[in-house]
Length: 97
Image 1 (cartoon, rainbow, N blue to C red):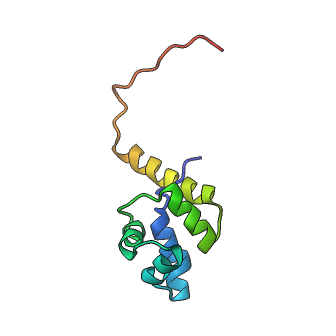
Image 2: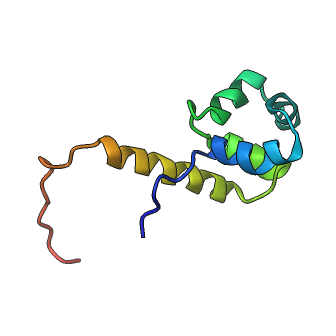
């Protein structure tokens, strides 16, 4: 079942971890050992979460790196479904394997 408008990981991090705990993005960036501007782009949803960042988040916040990447993929796929026109895409007939 497709999720309706799944959150970008940055939105999730802000809403679930930072805001309720009074933690700033700059503080989290320090814990992640990344530039504050790098994390800021993720928190704003203007940058994708990379596998490297998923590893850092997993160690610092928790959750598996796979779950962070799955969240990013779910968001990206939802966005693509809103913008990609598949009307002219054809189906390839393949022999059964």
